[in-house]
Amino acid sequence: MVMSTVQTRRQEVEQLRREATIKREKLSKSMKEMLDFIREHEQEDCLLVGFSSQKSNPFREKNSCAIL
Image (tube, rainbow, N blue to C red):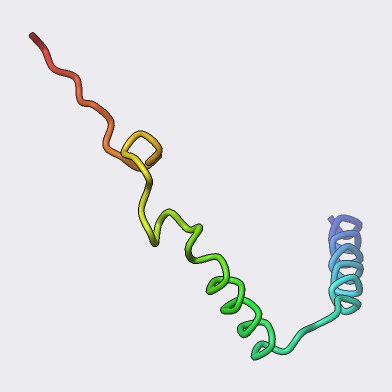
């Protein structure tokens, strides 16, 4: 029990060390880049501009079964 707790804590410490080395960006910069990307690609987004045909829409309702 004690060994598994020690091992778990060591893994947590190693994970925290890895996370501490990650380069951080300011949120304001990241959000600006994200908005720029969205604006540049909005004409290609089928959810915003629609689909060219009903067959190319993966979200269309499927045909329901009918009993004859």
